[in-house]
Length: 572
Image 1 (spheres, rainbow, N blue to C red):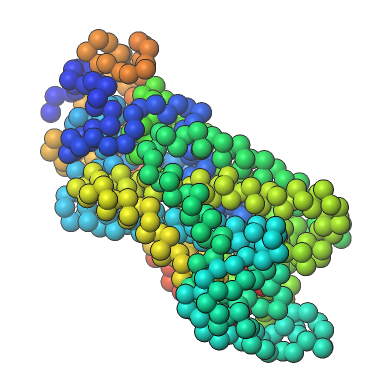
Image 2 (cartoon, rainbow, N blue to C red; image 1 turned 135 degrees about the vertical axis):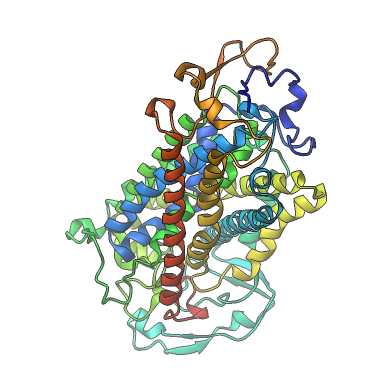
């Protein structure tokens, strides 16, 4: 197969091709306008997002060794996965050096055909819709907490009213005058109001389908952004990134005012005592994978980034920053509050044995629960300004990290639907509206957030974000696909030719000065890796992730099967 260069194959390229699908010729999405800085903000928002507040819970449940090891390992694996997928993406004729547009599932279809394409559709939608549903649940819960803090209570429509009895308040409060079990009147009302920041006496919304004020407010703010193109969201992404960084700094510094640091109770063991009911390693892999489940969004970003923006530089820089964030907030949060943090697998915590519903699902629950604030960080709780800043950081995190991520996932799903022949109306419904409908019955289910993170990551994210890109890269290197640029011929180029493509008059680039653009390779040419070494690396990665995902799923099922189901205790 003859060698093809970026310049020689681009003679018919025009600005109008920026948003035209290489596979179908359909025009959709935005132009190639996303710069390096905005791309970094988008990647960091995408990788961190709603998962950061629950990382401390994982450390509290499992100890510091396995989470830290997996964060470093999965960081490298996800960055390689991105690089491999993008290399296969640029080898598709008509998309040399990403001059056209092609989405995740169409790339799979080009290399693997119709059957695997359908499997990738299932995996992609499972992964992205799960991420969206998790973000919706968290944003709605945090918004309800914000409304309760401002107005005393949050209200909502109870779509499934039924009686509910709270059992165990005596053990929680330690006051003998409080009855052990009693009904919650608000549970049977179609319209009800509760203080979601004070649930010591039970949660009347537990296990009910609730259309709450927080849910509706989040919906109104987020839904319009999902109708935009990805490049039109960049201003919001940059603003959200700045807001999120401010919140992270507040959480980090507040943690060191914890009573644990005053009384030398901050130590985290390498491995938690497996004889304890709150200790487990089962939730670690799923939680880490969830945070690095961003590869499926990469093609949409590549399609709309400026052509002089390096993929490897953006991805490795952005993901490395995220790793520092995970370590800083996960370890400090665990040191400060480990007694009250519910594990992602067990749903239990160290402090209250036998009563998992009294534990905090995330560090944010500590900041919004007066009882826990008073117990764990009294210096902050008793200081008016400090207490206000700590709680404000929680509510600013809603638009900063959670709400900003929902439109991105929606847009990627929408793009893939449109490219594969779905109508604009159906694509908008499936990508933008559907996750909100599914989230309604899950909003106040016991430990729904952590369980959803664990299983969606092990089943969908491991497949679409890791196994598919690696095997696709292996398939590319084997040269099994007709009509794909010859990888061996390109590999024979000199290092200088492989790293840069000259821009000339026959390769017109909108908003790009004459010069050079980087050629993307998963492995830098300077490593001088042979074709065989790269193929073997891809196969080994597929085997490792496949084995880990299956083992993690079985382990998680075995662990969660022993968990209790307490509707009235949700969030208490």
